[in-house]
Image (cartoon, rainbow, N blue to C red):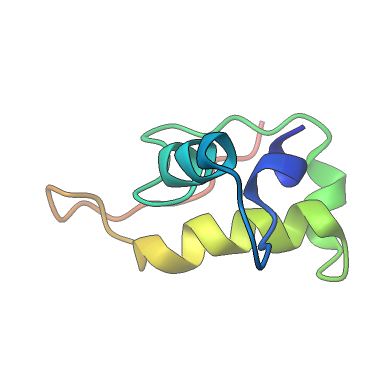
Length: 72
C-alpha cells in the first residue's frame, strides 16, 4: 500500500497529493519495516519508494540528530 501511495505520478488526484505530502514530504518521524529483506534489492519498488523519503531527509532529524536504520 505504501508504495502505491508514494509512487511518482504525472497527475495526482487531490487525495493522492495529500497522501504523498503526508508520507513523503516531510515524511514520517518513525518508520518500521517488516519484510526488511525486500529493502536490500535496489531494483524493488518498495526500495525506490523508501529512497524518496530517506533521500529527502539527508540523514538528519529536525534537531540535527543522525537518523540510522536499526536492524532487529
